[in-house]
Image 1 (cartoon, rainbow, N blue to C red):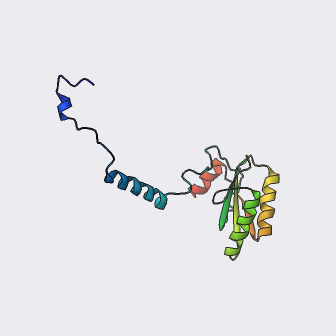
Image 2 (cartoon, rainbow, N blue to C red):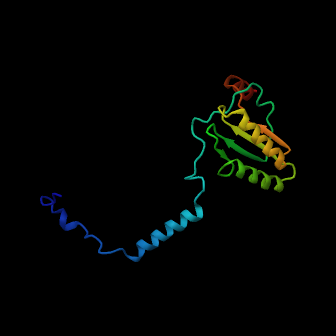
Image 3 (spheres, one colour):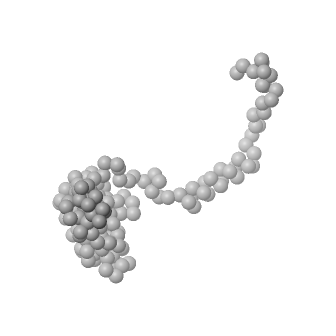
Length: 150
């Protein structure tokens, strides 16, 4: 580094000899913060930007509220409070159905998910005790604008 013309070297602090106590306190506080306030969704896999739900006319007319929801990708990944496989989904559905009076489930499946996989999920939800299982769909953009304009 060129410091001779302005004599900058005389104004620089020397490098610290070792890590002092404050460094370790800061590191400890950072670790504590991330453990207490961290989210399990920060580094977990999620729905990508290419996730497209099926489009169907009249989807908003049949909309109902549900107690629980899952998301299904064409690759076979199922997200229900984390990434689960079919066996784990069955256990999760059974545990969730026991907590609710009249459990209902929304299946948010990408438009590329095979019907065979969806029917397996619906039958698993029914056998677990879910009274209502709804497949999610979106209105076409033109119809959505008309409904929102009313």
